[in-house]
Image 1 (cartoon, rainbow, N blue to C red):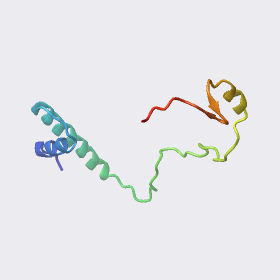
Image 2 (cartoon, helix red, strand yellow):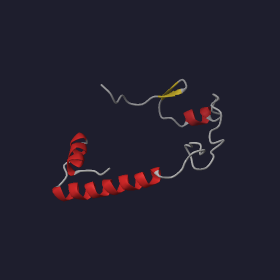
Image 3 (cartoon, rainbow, N blue to C red):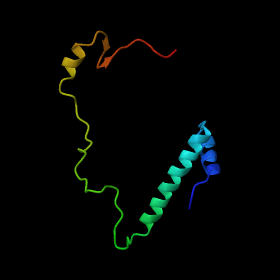
Length: 95
């Protein structure tokens, strides 16, 4: 499968890109080479290979999402120039 200049123009129009004729030719060549490489990869025998989202196993990246009270809340609020109860008061930014 190869990419034509018309394919590039159609995609450029969808993406609202204004490409010069030289850029259209360059992208046509580059996208065709990418597709040729993908076709070469499709020739590989992948039977028995399980799909993966990461090339290496990823485990334990996130801590459990448990609510907790911030221990330095009083100290933090003491630095606020204007506050109401446990909240910062700021000037209104939306009318």
